[in-house]
Length: 102
Image (cartoon, rainbow, N blue to C red; front, top):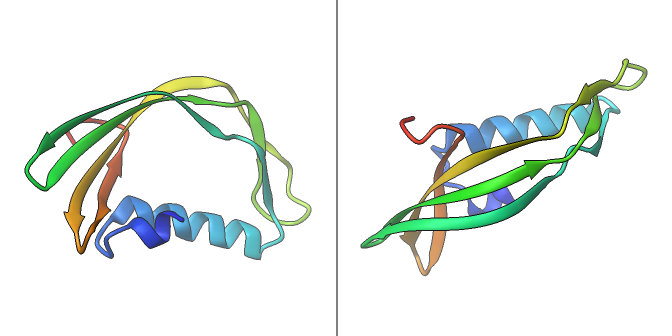
């Protein structure tokens, strides 16, 4: 899981986990809305790397809580940037962003 791979200071990781937890706790759900990697590139420097993942985001819906009206997502394509570091014999996610300059 992302939580197991993330550094405790990865704000985006924490936000994603909190959002998913609150939706499921409130009886909501995701349908579709999956990310499909198209290609992956990395820029490795010593024990740090930026991994660029070209993703397709599938059409779907998010129901934020039980009985709520679904929010429909449209298919799109975008890059996700993972800033990672080698720590204790594994790669740890330091931050995730949709902008390289973040």
